[in-house]
Image (cartoon, rainbow, N blue to C red):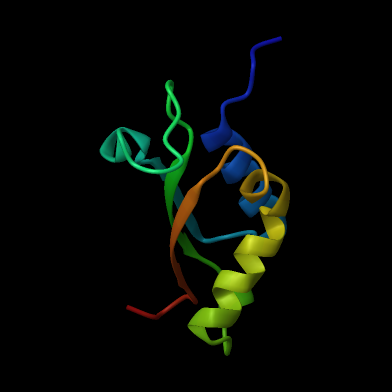
Length: 92
């Protein structure tokens, strides 16, 4: 069985937790070489773009908390930084 990469783990957990209309997870680790938290091989710095009805009526802080909660294991493990753009459907 192939080893699941962190990007896939994040995508799967967010898909399961929020059933998003759209989801994109980008590994930006290569942009942080030499900075805190960077590890050889990457998988430490990610950016998430997600659109989900679960965020309707929620503040940006609440949306970030929801995502951080869904990814608690990853954030307490190898993921050093997570940039989040979370929107409800119809928002720009």
